[in-house]
Length: 391
Image (cartoon, rainbow, N blue to C red; front, side, top):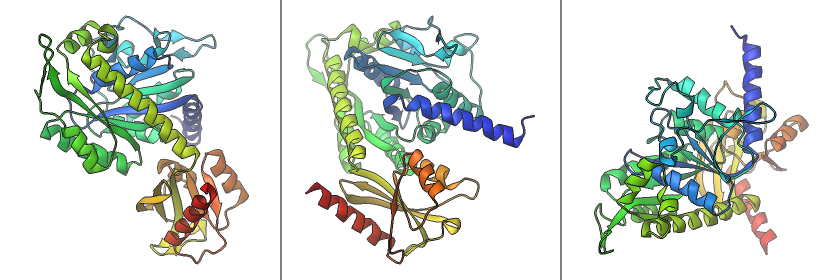
């Protein structure tokens, strides 16, 4: 049996490996859906292949452990994990610019059932990220199972800077579930890249005319209602079923088709928005600022007593959301702040050791001279200073 101290050391090692691997990946995108059957995996696979065809280095991670479809849809069920010169296992090479990983190649047979509970699934996903050498990537596309269970939650906690790309269809029943997915992202502090409306109309292969087979436009209306970006519509193409079954993604098999062109437009939007959101963080146009408080209106100066934190989401130097979150007793301060995906903290007099540790974990430390100020006032003063710097 592993002693607690040894177990803690092993966990620290794994976390370190995960951080090292993620530092080599510029953008991480989890493709999600509120319900099954909306074509989420089809969208994820075509996005990954499309990005690779534009000379981006891309990884595709299939974390749908109970129903892995990526190897089949890529036509790569016979490919195996590569072995690096240093002995580490690498992701499976699909093309010069695209590598992928799924649970299926690791199973005894293609039809083996995965009967795992939460802790085992969480451990497997962390190993997929930390123990497998992905190399340097421009994009890591993560195909998550439908809903808001263990797998999406593990990704949200393990990759705090991942973006969510939410796939829906125009029907009302799908849109209702998308709202739950958006609420999940807000709850776990995951930034939403945008919404994609799949199966948005049907293009007749004979006459080329469009038909609203499953309605049209519901995804865009929902995005506007929920205040998130709408990234594009993907129309139904009858060949998309055959290309998935044959392992030839439509964007590569039929590049001149209307649906392939729609995927290309979606990919252009993804590239544009990810670069914009990355720039927002570098320029501090997006911040998540934490302040220790003893009450909703009072700043807490003694960090040892800090149990409550006011957390502010800032975009374009305006407060979007304010939450009050209680720090659990069983985790340390830095772990708590990282779990909340905090980018800045406001403290009165932190120790040098704590300040250095926060900076090491890419959390900026802001110091205040007047701890008597209202937390909201501290935030407004800082934002006022940032606005002055721009002018």
